[in-house]
Length: 600
Image 1 (cartoon, rainbow, N blue to C red):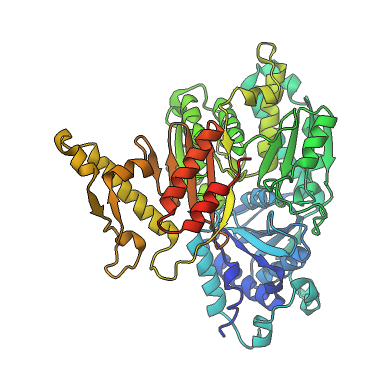
Image 2 (image 1 turned 90 degrees about the vertical axis):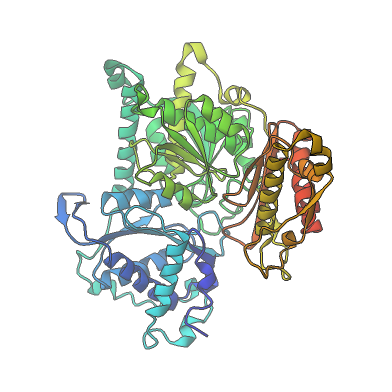
């Protein structure tokens, strides 16, 4: 068996993540060498090194490394730090941090950073995320790292029985040589003080608030308000994740009344996975908001890059509505909001967001842009030099402010503070003093399903996945609909009853079911009603005037993800029925599963 074959499945679309049994010390050591090769091949850029006493310019490549609260994460970060320093890189150890804090500190140097985290996953999962030149890796770059790991494998250093032995990393700690780091020059391996890691980050956010006060008030009033704390009562659920290490210090700096739940980092997650989007996961937060008569409740995932909120009535705010509110804040508080440079601005949202969102964003004077699902895809588009994106968000709770005030990264705590600042201004506006629930109530009603996972149907008799089949089928239906709109009226009835073969597969030997289908034009209007908008950039999405649906292949598991929404329960059922009808020719069981997905 090739070296580290068992670990290949860890290299996913967005990061490295999987069962802790595969994170053996030999694998981490080999991965450290692959990271060292990656970072050593980057052009060395001068950087101002931040430390407690002075700024010292260096030409050396620098990598910041942090970790989350999971059992084994600290040990993995320690080993990676040692290996990178042994390979001549300067390593700045951050300790326990959120993923966005790692990104913030990477930007203070050369944009290179690693954080050992499995985000919102279960406690027996470990993972690693990284940045190169402030950019998240693409899926192809992640696979390249795996191939670099296997091709540089040294059998003398990592015997076969270690490389493929599925031993828990936390049980294999004794294999780490604790003396390695003590033998390294101090300038190659530096541990930043915990207070410094937190304070520099908090002070950077404080500067943003000062800018916002100056943006919204006269200079005199801004100076008076710079030390003002937001007059809101809020409840924060850290879910025993990494945000608990800093949330209290951060939010009490800016807010008068803060109540914390589950704020102690605990990799055992005694109350459940640190995932605020899981069903019923916010029940405790909802109760606390109501019992404390709070203005808002905030929930962060395990590594602090996702946000969910609860309004003052204890009701969960749908991510679609939260995305809209944050986009509105980004546009109205943009540094260039008073000039014409924002006329060409764009707001990015992923394909799982509801049908109301594009219209609402257009009403703000911005251009809505749909994207594939995936926070790394979102960051890559935001960081493109030609983009006009001022804000980007995903249904899963990733939100990026791209207004040059702070790092362009999905930082849940920063996004929450921007929302709180805006909400406080709303509370203080005599002419428009509305609680959050009333603001949400003014937005269009959404009846939706959750982002639902479905088993991946078996397609052993075809060369195409089910999503590929469905995509080609929908493209063909769209083609027939387009043809019918230009048909001679005298022959329309004859064409409606005729059948045309679907011959759209690229391969001449494809056994895909779509290659043999016969579709009557009359049936196309039932499967793809007039006025329906089709998007296939990531699975299949259909938008109608009163609803939308999406079915796509998950990037992180061997399953399908589906979401449906409508203006009413009937509209929701209609869009589910449309997708069920489209899927039934390929997989009848899937069609029934779609119909059975309940509304939230």
